[in-house]
Image (tube, rainbow, N blue to C red; front, side):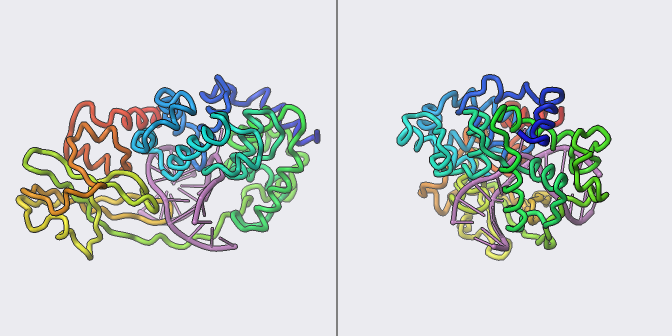
Length: 358
DNA sequence: TACGCGTGGGT
DNA sequence: TACCCAAGCGT
């Protein structure tokens, strides 16, 4: 074990996180689900979702037997919904191929949808104690500073070099402690902004510190300016007060989730209303911010007597209370809650919001 | 290989 | 306000 790994393990013993939900108990299933939820998602945001998910799907078998709608509903609000589709598909594959147990073999893990190189490494190290490197945002930051990696984030040469360094430092002993430790080290000490170099036990061997470029590493990826897209969101109700929702295509934005219909401002929504509209009212426009673009949402409330296409599989009329059982994007939930305020509706998302604020 | 994929917090 | 990006993966 090299001095770097020793320092990381020491750090975890003193300051590391040891009480996270998925660490108690730490089973392969719980490690797997948590690692997928944690992809590009902050720890504080995941905790509530993880605990609810475990209550709802306590075993791989229960997850595999669940319906797609049940899984998507449990993921609703967490984002990157392909993760939920892949997790569900992988659970079924694990039952078929691996006798219902998360495999330990690297190639078998990698073959499961939603498990890439880093997640496979995390599962092997944390759930099975098999030394395997990981490379998440925290590890990238720590390694690129210690070794003064000047390449831009996301570029293939940079990624390759960081994987080489991750492999180089991965110890053969105490791998669980090391794996958790290097993430804690990156999250709490070697932070993106205001790193605590004065408290860092690796400062004397940190090449970025020696060169005075800690704040410039890692070098951020190039970004283009955000485009603005515009859409209608149609809150259509019938005379009984039911709300019309449709399932979005499996691929693309909000894939597989339920939403009120969305239509571009150019194409309009005559195909849905079928000129049967009664009252039509424009609600306040608002903007939803995505990572790479902004979506300007124009909500339209309309009451119709008869619907043009209510026979389709991917379309249904629901009462607002039924929305809790459907996986919905955050802005759709918000809009429905505004339009149909109820006391208990969306209790799940409110809980998550409260936890995030706490 | 570069890009699409959510949501919310931080600066 | 505008931009960054978080326990990355799939295509």
